[in-house]
Length: 533
Image (tube, rainbow, N blue to C red; front, side, top):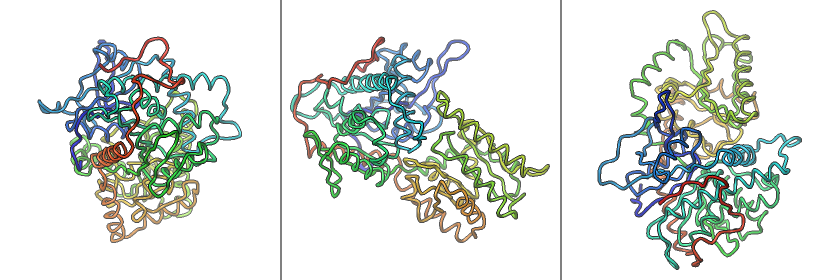
């Protein structure tokens, strides 16, 4: 970081930095939580006192939360894919507070609202003749979403320490993460007006005409929720601009685009662009490990001396895997000289299988893969290798072997895959990248940008990437690697902390009675969420 953070940093995210599993013997074991958000935010560990508030995602997490005092888990934080070593003694304390939110409330909030509505809105995924459908069932789910957000606001308010009327909390700052927790900043500001608050959106942001699919009151509540923060961050300029557009169109807020500030209901929120990159040294060190080497040997045996096209994704609708496979099929049809000379390795891992749309999409990916193999495969050539399971060392091995990386989401907040592969590829891989990914703003000079809906244009780009001479590959590869490592997690986090500090100093909040909350900030019904001490 450019500066060491002082005081307590409060982090809130749906998925935490640790996840639990229950063995056959009934014992709980922990491992690093999945997802790039947890890895990036763990950069603050060891540099400041951290209270990380997250949700118990399944039964094993709930069991761990209930077994811990006040739900607080003393676990080491880090950015590797395995559990990190314990921090040095005497270093700042890091505590994870895992909220034991009742399973029905969590399911309605997470699956019913966050993943089925807000994710679809920001990624423009709705089949609008049929969805969304906002009726009585949705209103019940929205109440649970409010309760879920209120549980986080309660925990953060308590974790900040005793309130200080008329002054900012002594060194404490709250960093609220992503679309799951869009209501938290406003709720937390009502409880703790002395606490500087930031919110960061890891997704894209929908333009006003699409955002308006939400019920009017819900659209306002989402925007006002984020505007409870002193600073709101986004990965790319276009997502920040869309947010400003929505604030102006939906709320009638005063938007200053020159300074990127929003004035609404007597409060000013600054809006910043904080693109997340990769810790190149750490990633390269991990990719040199024995398990990655073993996967490289296995994958090399499958590919032989053929060119290798690689994609690494979640089986998520926005990742556009089916069109990517269709583009590969068109490549083999339109440029038959590649038959037998290229292999496509598509590694995906299951995502949100609680939702029927995702199960159906995974099945569509598998059907398209079978069709390609049936149409083009021979006794001595597998044109496509599809694996639908999560294997991080295998992904790193595939990056190193890739000649071409295909990243073609229909819409993506950032996409770190597009940044990881250029840093690891032993062959200066060419990158075919959707112009709708947030990463496109930084990687445009080195990547081959495509319209993700244009299958034929994507096939053309794959052909160009496979045919690229070594000098051009190396030139582009150097640009990609430089851009990918330009803003590693520590710097990404530091820039937000600096922006939050500046925003809080410029517009200190008026003192309000601690514990005051808006009428829609309901508590979780039933079992109360466990709180910080």
